[in-house]
Image 1 (tube, rainbow, N blue to C red):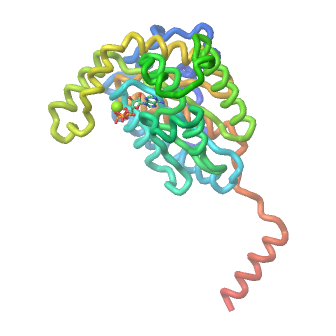
Image 2: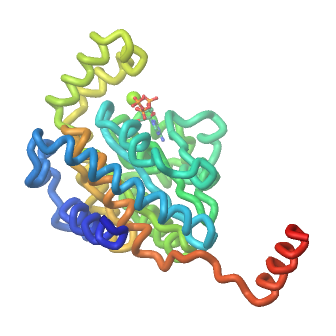
Image 3: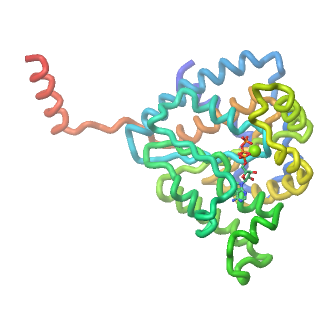
Length: 299
Ligand code: ATP
Ligand code: MG
């Protein structure tokens, strides 16, 4: 299959999951088990599609890097065990590590808390020509911080600024920040991996029962399940408030990892393919330089 065709398929495949206008978005309209027309029997086919996608992605990243103008920022948000790490690992497996940076944002350090909340993320923005991945991000500021007000208390904000209007202000600032990035050539794509509560339980039990997966489990993960409905509410509002044409959310069904990964890969291909990526043109003086170098090497 030609790259052009893969790009066309990627656009169509990822489109149903893209949210560019949040106003009417409802989380209940996305089924975490959704696999479009594909059944479990299609799993091997999906692996082939992913492999083809990764080849196309490699080609696109090579141009992105060589051209050195655009940057791509991919943001991953999800409940625990939704498959963020696996999606990042698989989709980025063909990518040249030199042109890719991954950052995980966990509980903020005291140095982080001594600054505005975007500070620690701004320091990690991708260079031009690079793909930057945020495994969690400043979006935690309208998620976990909303569900657990005690985190807000640690932020040392002047009380005048920490009133009820704070969420509206944060949404506005995030929208503006992403518009700023877009206007500077940093393309933003955001992924919410939407796993069901039932599938999360199954994955937690697997992590507890399989000694090789024990390290992935923390008892805090199980405790957070008690806040499931609160999280769904804040996730929904986050998407409603921050999905834009230029910085869309992809709400990706995450109960079937093989499907999630193909959707994420397709969305990343679509993002890169929407740019005018091209290898830099070599000017006359550079051509002369190359010819002279060749002559010298061969003499
Ligand atoms: P894993 O899949 O390995 O569990 P993870 O991304 O959940 O990966 P953890 O170390 O388990 O990583 O958790 C990071 C925790 O940090 C999450 O519970 C997240 O909500 C929390 N966190 C991230 N940013 C903030 C923030 N700004 N304020 C408070 N907590 C935050
Ligand atoms: Mg965790």
